[in-house]
Amino acid sequence: MIKTGDKIPSMKLMVVTADGPREADTAELLGHGKVVLFAVPGAFTPTCSAKHLPGFVKHAADFRAKGVGRIVCLAVNDAYVMAAWGRDQKVGDAVVMLADGAASFTRALGLELDLAARGMGVRSQRFALVLEDGVVTHLAVEEPGGFDVSRAEAVLEAL
Image (cartoon, rainbow, N blue to C red):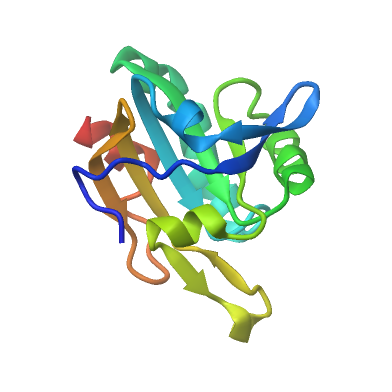
């Protein structure tokens, strides 16, 4: 599992843009300045839609005031699902929606979660991390079913 002091892996994923999905390199997207990356088990799922993503949208200005240049939401969903979820949640430009459709990035981080028994396949654990120039400076991984250490307010306190 990735840990504090590790460099973020570089790979190609799909990011949602105003012009539709486009390929993005994680080293480019996450590797410059201070970036907050948080991950959810799935778009449109209850806690993710009611609390996790909305918290980061609501506090986007607070993150910017603490020097965060980019907030990124990661889920093991395709780019079209992430785009629809971003529209549904009125994300605008507050949060970058990053699609890890094959869970390759999530696996590279060592933060995958097997939810096959629930019919969801491999997903991401719920977590948040802070990167400075591509290096992890803070990592908060939730216990199964938890929603405490990765919520926006907790990440703001850690900055």
